[in-house]
Length: 473
Image 1: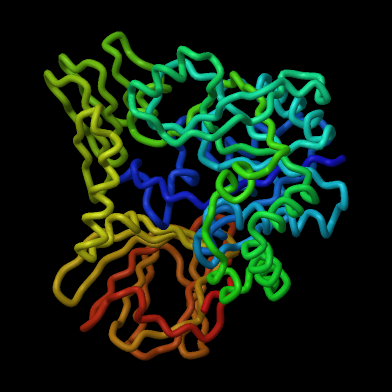
Image 2: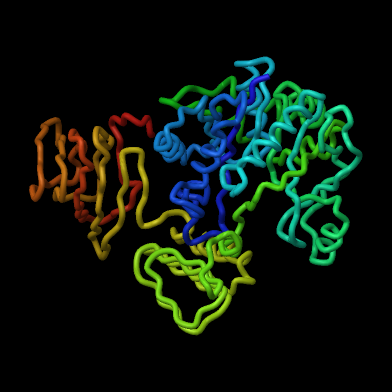
C-alpha cells in the first residue's frame, strides 16, 4: 500500500488578519519560520516511509502561489486540483480519493491541512506508521492530539475501546464533541480519554469512497461529475465549476467519521498547533525575558506577555501588557491577547463596508511576479512592478487609462501595437489609452519598473486580455 499525502489548502485564516487575507491566506505566509505554513507541511513529509509525492487541493485563485512555493522547496506535486468554490473538507477529500484511486487501486491518503504547526516530526511520522497499520486492519483513522490544557477553541474526540486487531495504541472513536465551554474542557482534560480533534486523517481511498457513498452519496456524485467534467489547465486540474458548485458543503467529520462503524483514533503527542489566532503564535513563539514574541523592527520598554510584529516599519510599545500588535503597510491591529478570536469581526466589518483590506495586501502576487501600490490620488496611481526572469504579462489593453513605465533595474521587452523595443535602467516608455501592450523580462535578473497610471478609471478590472501564457480569462 502506497501512502499519498494530500494537502488541503482551502482555509482563509480570518483570525490572523491583517497578515492573512483572501488573496494570501495564512497557509501561504511565513508565520512560524522562514518557510510558509504550506511549505512546512510538505517539508515535514521527507523521510516518511513508502510515501509518494503530495497531491494538493486548493482554491483556484491560489494556484500559482501554491505551485511557486512547492517549486521553491524542490517538490514536484502529483497534481494540483483547483476548487472553483470552497465546499469544506469532505468534497476535497473525495476529489483526492477519486484521483488517487484512478492511479492506484491500493492507494492510502494522508489528509493534512496546509496551515498547522507540528514541532515533533519524529513523533508525527511514528503516529502515521501506527495509522498505516490501523488502516490495514480495516479502519478509517483520525489523529487526536494529546491535550495539555483545557482548550475551548478545539473540538474533541472521545476514545473508545482498544483496537486489538490493529496491535497498537489505536482506539475506536466513541464520539466527536463540539468545542466545549471552559468547564467542559476542564472535565475532558481530567478524564484522560478525550483528545483534540486535529483535522488530520488517514484512509484507504477505496474504503473512504465506499463510506461516502453509503452516508453522503450526493457529495460523491457531485465530486465524480466535477472531476470527470474537469479539464487540464497548464500544470493544474480544474474541477467542473457547475458540478462542484452544486456539491453540498460538509466536513469529513460530519459526512463520514461520525457515522462509520470503522472509525479509529490514534493519540498523537507531536507538538501540534493549528495556529488559529495571533494568541496561538504567541504561545508557540520564542519569548524574551519579559514573555514577548517579536518580529521585525520593534522597540519595547516595559512591555510584558505581548506579541509585536512589524512588517514594513518600526513599531514601538511602552508600558503595555498582554497585547497583540501586528503592523502591515496598510493596516495595524492592536488587540488584547484574550480577544484574539474576535479579530474575525474586523474582516466581517471590512466585507460589509465593501473595502479591500480583507482581500488584498498592498503587494499583490501574480504568476509573473508582483505589483504593489506606492501612491494614489485623483486620476493617477503609482505602482512598483517586479517581473521574474523569463516571465511576461498578458498582451492587453485598457479602455480608461494610459501608463508610463520607467525601468529601475533589469531589462524590459515592451510590445506596443505589435512593435517591440528593449529598455534598460533609467529608460522609459509611454502606453497610450487603447493601445495593445505587453511587458516581458527577457533577462536573467528580476525586472523592476515604476508604473504611473493616469485616467478616469484605474481599477484592476479595466484589462482586456488578448493573449496570456497563464491561461487567465
